[in-house]
Length: 104
Length: 448
Image 1 (cartoon, helix red, strand yellow):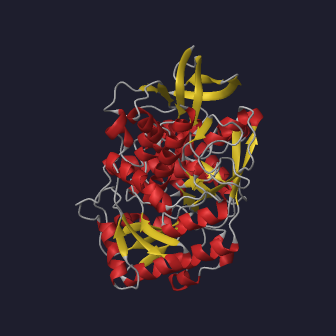
Image 2: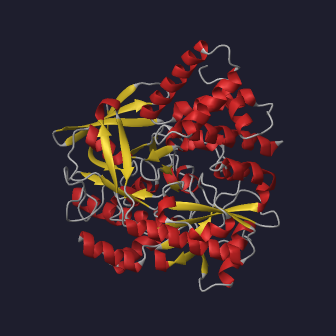
Image 3: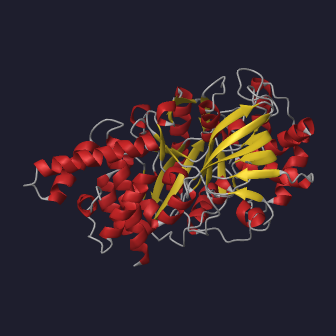
């Protein structure tokens, strides 16, 4: 899966939220949510995650969570539409994190 | 190849209104094609609901300054299954404006029988429910001001009131119409089953398209029809968070109370009260998020929606089978959004809100919250669930005539929110259903 648990962990770290037991489920839901977006955005997003996957290999010496933490932080300060990637991913993670959180 | 006299594309409020009209007239040679399905009941705003009942998982974007997030339903019953169920007739001033600007010549007396029909069918009524805690705050806020609140009547969702009761309907679920081909007097519809991926063909002589504000023109455009214009309208919403001393959490229901502030074309109301949506709202500003998450239950989300003058534009990318949406806020709309929101903030402060939170990444001091400027406007998050007018009825430069009939083919009736001549300034389902029934009767009379 291109969208892995470390992406979720990195964003929970950004929000200073405790790691939930449902990280795997949140990552799966994130993947489904991205697959559900409009075709043009879906392909752009999947291309983006594939790009990150390759870059991640080059930066193998940086811990994965830290790598994604800074990548998304970098994208969040870029102008629209680039910052929307971070906004969308963070939004989806928060929705699923707090939906589970409510049930606890 | 199956053949019907009438085929309706889309089972939302507009498509269902035409179906009901045909059935009541004793016409049964009709099929409804719906891209979604009769999903099970879901909880508002949850992952399950967004994936099952919304197009694109509830996330699409209209590019603007600032960008606008929007969502629309994709399920049997369409928008009536996922919205708050608030019912309005078309306001008198709005209808007058539509008549003068679009030349449609409709008066309230003509619509009266259609309003009454819709209200009886959908069992539109005010409820005896006790207002939610957040709605009580909205009500309380008006008591100390010059504004009044009103309880808006609600309808019953179409699935439970219509589709679940009528097994004999030719409802074809999980099926997307990908192309319309005109062949002589007939329409051949190329349909894709979303589950099996099989392609089937259906034939009809009269076609009703009710696929929604953006899907209806897209289907026509990609089928080779000519559109006179590519504009659309919305009701932009700004959310405002207000923190109080006590918890406002009493479940996720949205109570049907609204406040009108006509000076700035504004309507105030309350938003979904679930923790995950409040967390999403707070995440616009990371400092606010970290500080306020522990008190999330004390925060209520309110909104200011305006009836704007600006318009959006649709661009079609045929090679990608998609559309790109852009919107231009006019100066007057920005002023109305800012000044209307200021009034909402004043109302909330007047009932003891200890903190006001705006959906922006900017750090704004509480003492400056009422000084929010036009410059800062671009940093706000705007959203909408009300989109319309891409196939607006009218005489001038319109995609449909004053009876909702498509200008490029007189055997196609458009029957969804896309036909509204402009922003109604109220929740659009009531207005669009009344117009759709009026148009459906004329279309059936003409084509029978």
